[in-house]
Length: 274
Image 1 (cartoon, rainbow, N blue to C red):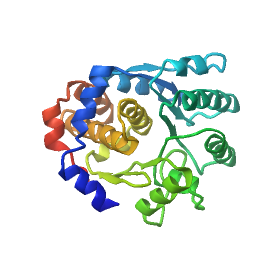
Image 2 (image 1 turned 60 degrees about the vertical axis):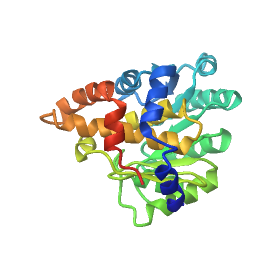
Image 3 (image 1 turned 90 degrees about the vertical axis):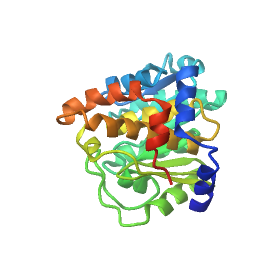
Image 4 (image 1 turned 90 degrees about the horizontal axis):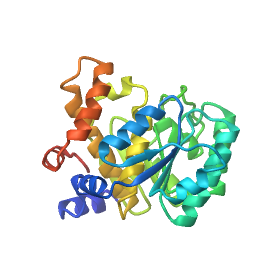
């Protein structure tokens, strides 16, 4: 699989900057049912990319809101049974419309309730992209691992093979975020090596990554390539932002600024994708 993805990149058929320009020109509406802790940051990251965020959670309107959206992002970070009900309604509406559904399995492995609700979503709706850190994805794939709240626990296995297994099992694209981001579908495998360690010190960078993935998936024909491009653009902006920041607080402010100002030439020069 790695040989296939490298060949694609060598031919120039996938550049992260191409999809960034599509986001900015098409301005897709991205519907979120997401984490209350980071909801503002998720809305902001979509907006600075050039798209439009909407955060509708009420079961009475989620289907209708999904009907006018170009992608749906679900994040179980602040999970309740009622929220899962809304997520199912919205996901089924997205499936009917044939728009991509991103599920951030935030905190998978932390509690039985959380694990059970993830399985319900995966079994009862079609999820197109599953996103999480190493231990979250390992838990969803059936491994006996624990997650430290929303931080990744230790996973003693080949993460690329783990992602491939889950992608085949659930017929979807799987994204494992970390020092190196891994993006896998049934026939493609990418690694994004952009980014900076300071991202792990800011609450919300993982949730924002899911929003970025959803935004790029809304305009991409291939979901693995879209997820890869989105994470690459996001991580390049982080590399730019850390140069201007004095710590995690100013980094987040600069991240929004750098993503808003990011141009195609910089993305082309800086992208590190295998």
